[in-house]
Amino acid sequence: MRLSLAPLRGLTVATYRTCYTEYFGNSYDYAVAPFIPLTTAGRIQPKLLKDIFPEACGSLYTVPQVIGKEPDRLIEMANAMKEYGYTELNLNCGCPWKFVAKKGRGSGLPENPEMFEAMLAAGVEAMPNGFSIKIRLGRKSTSTLETLFPIINRYPLKEIIIHPRTGEQMYEGDVFLDKFAEIVDAFTAPVVYNGDIKTVFDALYLKKRFPKLSGLMLGRGAFADPFLPSDIATALSSGEEYPCELGDTLPHTETLPHSPERKQQVLAFANALYQRYSAELFGPAPILGRMKEFWEYTATYFENGAEILRKVQHSKALAEYEQVTKLFK
Image 1 (cartoon, one colour):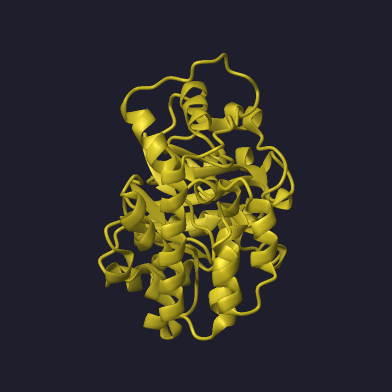
Image 2 (cartoon, helix red, strand yellow):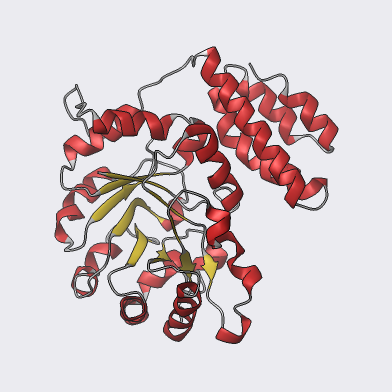
């Protein structure tokens, strides 16, 4: 079972991905990079693709992701990515943000079956044997995805990554595991599960309940616990099994408190990330913005995290931020 890093816009950028592997190893089999919007061929400038430059991605195998609804632009973008050596491409069919979905992109794309199919056809043509999609159950309904079985199964997708929520849920509320159970075996392409994997037990639960899964994709859970990918990889490779009876929901077994050694490593990683953002971004605002997003999830790794997170979020200067983050323990 393969393990992958989810594309989180503004979070899992190349700087984060390379820094992460330096501090926590290469537990992921691959990462899907945050989406790049489709544009006309004449406007595909190197700046648009800088997050997937091979030299920026380091040792972590990276799959680019695009978002849009124009088949011709998808082909043009795929051709541009091939120039950098890419043979795989993922299409975002699940972004929940209203300003994206209401324009027929992201989670809005599957609401238009004809346009959705045209994008699948273009993707398979552009990236033979290397085109995949990331999708939700639907934008408003949990039944949209299952209406698309005939379309999806017509195309030889590399894999289909399913986040079993609706777009309107954003990232809140429980995932619909029962609905996922109803549809997971209906696809001819390999299926990867994504959504609310927060602990090793969650991963083992999913492996036991859905034995045909080809992979698990980690997102916010890996930010909350940077050791989670390596812990899951170790458990999977050792053949560890979920020890309890299967329930209807993910177990989310708590792992706090963490060891002092692990907490120090997380702090060292956060500091290295901060230093790299400081070197590549201009002015305190974007640097603080990146680090505030990071700590929104990673602060939970520390017993006093909630208290310090509030201070981090109110930091207005780099010196203030540096003093506040010394308080994590």
